[in-house]
Image: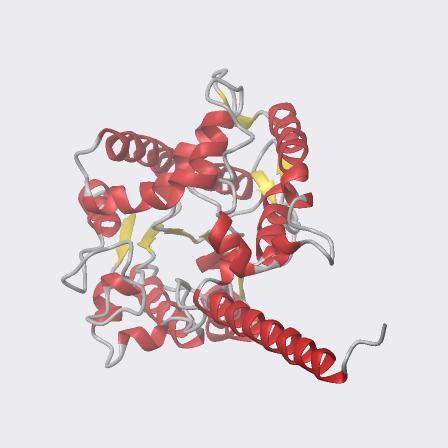
Length: 378
């Protein structure tokens, strides 16, 4: 029996119409909810299963080798910059980064050591400072404390070995947790993989709702608290430190933060090295119209609580200087123009921001360290 051509044509038109409608819906959902696409979900799970960092007993995690000084090198003076991705210069070309600019402006007689990478915090900074000070003399140590640091100190405390010796992290625990996370999330990743899998479609996932990242992990598991704090609670903890200083978790974060910064202060005093402390300003703390406001309600700009904490606890100590970045950022004509524009939730400084931070730190260094750089020019 021959099927009439008009029915074939009708079915073809219907198939094209349905396919076009599905495609339009899919494109719209991906624009409004890109996190619902199967590829995005798999990529996110892969990032959690196989992060770019590797566990380390001394510095918790490392990305690339840190450039510690070599004993006996020819540099007469050194300045140490310690911090996380802000101090490292995330999102900015090497030649435009804070450390590179400071090296350029202070000249070849001074060596700038940038000891920083993504997601570091004071519990790690103390080990960085301790090791570097043991290897070479320094004229100054500049520590850039980030808004994420109180939360990260709380998270990394899960891995600290408390044995009274030099601070270390439990390497075996970290490696075992990485294997545990990989085994738990691999089946979830497979549920959204495969070219014929409808769960690749953002529209389908919007209807069915992707499972929670915490689905494979149960309260009471050995690593549940660390995983929960890292995967789920971290953003809320950052928010809470800024918005609810009296909350139990905020107090716990402040206690840990202060403990580690106290140790850094003691180290610098023992080596007679001036310490410069900065609290990285985020856009919502310096701009009247920040692009990302979901975490931090207005009015804007909000106070930089972290800078207030540093100033009140360390600002009056001999040999310790607070770098007033919040005020300097606010004084610029367009504070929002000092931050990376994309994606919308990007928090890091752009090249203009790095340049402003460098000039601010450089002026403070030159005013507080008489003769800086003269040894290299003689």
